[in-house]
Amino acid sequence: MSAKPAVLLIGGVDPQGCAGLTADIQTVSHHDCHPVPLVTALTEQRSDGLVNLGALSAEAFLTQYESCVADFDIAAIKIGLIPDRHIADCIVKIVERHEVPVILDPVLAASSGGLSIEPEVSEIIRQQLLGKITLLTPNLPELGRLSAEVQPMELAAQQLLNEGLAACLVKGGHAETAFATDYFSSAQTTFYVYQPRLKNQVRGTGCVLASSIASQLALGHDLRDAIILAKAYLTRGIRDANQQGPYHLVTHHRHPLTISDIPRLCYRADLIGKHFDFPACPKNLGVYPVVDSADWVERLLTIGVKTIQLRIKDKATAKTRSEIFDAVATSQQHHEVSFFVNDHWQMAIEAGAYGVHLGQEDLHDANLLEIEQSGLRLGVSTHSYWELARALAVNPSYIALGPVYPTTSKQMPWAPQGIERLQQWQSILADQYPLVAIGGIDLPRARILKQTGVNSVAMISAITQADDYQSVTRELVHLWADHHL
Ligand code: TZP
Ligand code: MG
Image 1 (tube, rainbow, N blue to C red):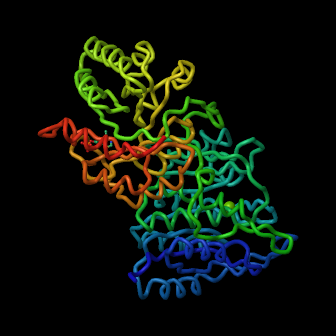
Image 2: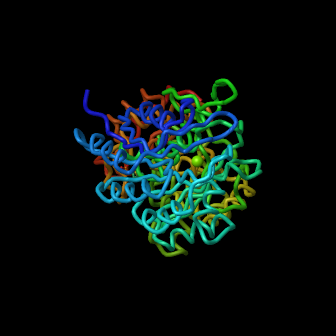
């Protein structure tokens, strides 16, 4: 077996084994990473509160650190309890020595209360640490301690970004709202991730979330995906929390994720928790060609294709419009055809198309309420976990995942997802959403993909660039013919 990525865990020991480094170590282990604990403090705490921070001396801390890094490389760092300014100064130096992702969970205000950290620590975090880390994960009281802006949380987070912080995930778990909502903010994007509120008062949740994000980054996920996966891990751990004496503790396990574990993502506060209801489409959409003209729609429907998408890019509006209207008319002349229009949702509504297909950017711009009211089906493209979280928030008629294989038909920053990822998504989405595979799929690959149980295969070049598109299309349709609805 190859070496696991090592995650340096800088934090305090909870002598009862509930929070702090114990929770961090369990989390990192369950992500198949190697936990490297670096103790900042030997705390004294129990159910009636924290009696003593028990900070280590700077000297003892740094000696320990040298052993931590003596024999292998560190892939990511997670920082928790910083008990005093001396340890804070040491941590600044440590972070400067590693060019790896650093997650700081600023343990300045525990949910249980009873924690009082000297104000100099907050000052060192603000002035010397914030500009050097990848992500800060404060709860609302901690955000209040660190930011000059008190509220709303969006402005408080922006204030920290203005001071040099790269990204912030504000944990809104303390707010009294129907959904537990976190707010992510970076120079590139801001969004909300939300889930129905689960049991409150589970210990160590902040440690688990930050350690899980650090592990996912150590494993190579991008920051947004790391956050979604970590939230899902924590949600499952809270849902299955076990009682230990007076506490509820996060349960750690490696069971596959379920659809309810994955948080929902949206960009607007007024859409948090909004339930969309797009009509269902056939569960098995089968062979799903994506073409760029009404003529192609006609040709392929004549051969027996039942699901098709018109994807017109860079054509004049009048031409786009006439192609869409022609294709809708053609689709209505054939029996039980699901005809989707890519992107041009207003024209799709006007023309009376069966559905629209939106990429993530289109999803951002489109008026989903209007599409929903018009009764069109909605298909959504995804290429990553955070895009899946976004798709789930709009509860579409189907979800597409790509590129499954390398493709030359579209320029994309994503590496091929591979068949393992496709199978994982198939089991997560299971009965709730038809899953459409797209990207580099030809007839031999379609044969393989069918075995994964995926409901549909979409393709561009395998059909439109084929020497004999008729025979390829017939074989594809035949391949899916026994895939009953
Ligand atoms: N989205 C993900 S991959 C892709 C799109 C639109 C292109 C698929 O084209 P091809 O030729 O089937 O690889
Ligand atoms: Mg915390």
